[in-house]
Length: 533
Image 1 (cartoon, rainbow, N blue to C red):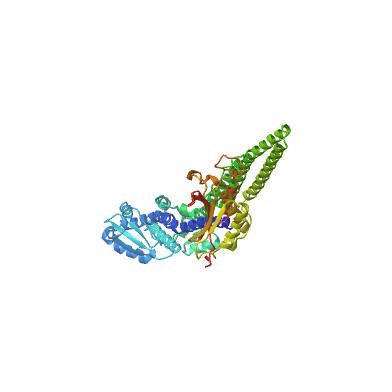
Image 2 (cartoon, helix red, strand yellow):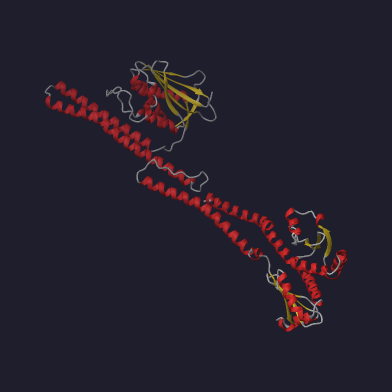
């Protein structure tokens, strides 16, 4: 649950981080550029009016006229500069040489540059005010320049002149009677007093009104369009955030859905009998724990089914021989009339029954061990005492074999960690296997190798070929073909040893013996505190 939550949280946090980064970066790259282009288009109208204002006077008088415009009406700092004095990017200079006004792409609206078309003169309009104040002063300047143009022609030509100016500008310019403005009485009174009225400045349709002095005519400028990008900015920001969150959720859900589909397909395939099916997901997938559980379950089921088939085949094979011998003995009992032969056949039948009983016991024991690791606790036991008890029991079972216990000097009091019952069975199985093949002698010894204990069982029997040393630990494997009761066995004893050693985090393997036969080695960890000397 926590892993699933954090994976989704990280995906959404990444989306929000990308959005936040975009908010700080994109306005600089997109919004600011759009606003600058908007101001440059708005400046085209004032540029033309100023050029018309200067056209009627000699070029040498332009500086004085610009200075007078700045002091009387503009409210800005105005300077005449040569284009070569400007330190601007090449694309900006190119626009100026083409006669287009520019606004440098800075974070604030600091100044505008208007090319005047003569002597490469550039008019620099310093703007150290807010955009709203800039708009108000710009409109004041425009009204002044337009009225100055109107004063130069008869009133009958005003309408035509204003229409032409509207064509030259980025926004409409209209001339209308005072009573056609649609303003209320208060606003009309303000107009009559010579005030400039602005409306809807912050709603993307700003417009301005001013009465022409000494007349009942009103000039209307606007509505002035705002950059299209600005109009949709709010929707773009909200939409971008929603899109990023949706994308993050989609990517997260896509990987989860893909792994869920894999789980569904693997479950169906396993249910249809494909026991090799395993669920493969990414290490950081939310379903990693579920995949590991599924794969562990599938492995155990496959192993159990395989063991069941193996056990069934082995049981049918192992039961066939003693049952055949018993059937033969029964047939012979019916035919023989000799009491000695009857007793011999009866003894053979009892031996076959004992063999069947031993087989059943081994099968039951192996089946119990094959179900999985049982719950047990390791106990600390003195090594010499434990080996001595098992060796004594083996001597009683096979008195005809000479069993010698060797312990290294100074190591007799070493302690080991083991489950007494299981490990005793493992070592007893190895000793009985050695006794089955030994001629006269078995040697039991142990040693300490780093942090592990090694118990060795040597015999003087025929030994085991190196190619077969791993096979002897597989269930129902016997390297000899004998069915004799002395050496035949059922092939389960060493398989049980291997399973018990696995449970003790140890191993069992075969080496050549110094006695000429086989050496079985049991190796597992000693206590972390080390041996007791």
